Length: 67
Image 1 (cartoon, rainbow, N blue to C red):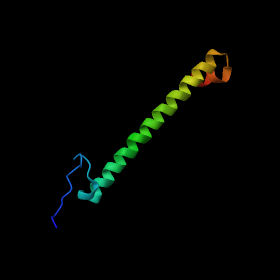
Image 2: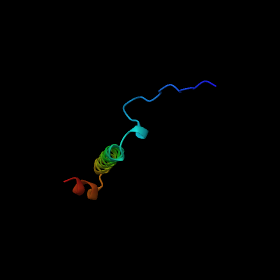
Image 3: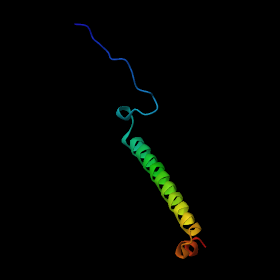
């Protein structure tokens, strides 16, 4: 039988099998912070636009909240 070695298909920038658990934890933490930040920005931006739209329609409470 011949010894078969599979080709290295790893992209090189993230290889969890060959990195320390500390590095994997840091990568996961950065990913979570970036994902949470993107969610927060998109949520607050959408709600601000909705409130401006309601103020333009004449909702007094929305206009007061924008001040």
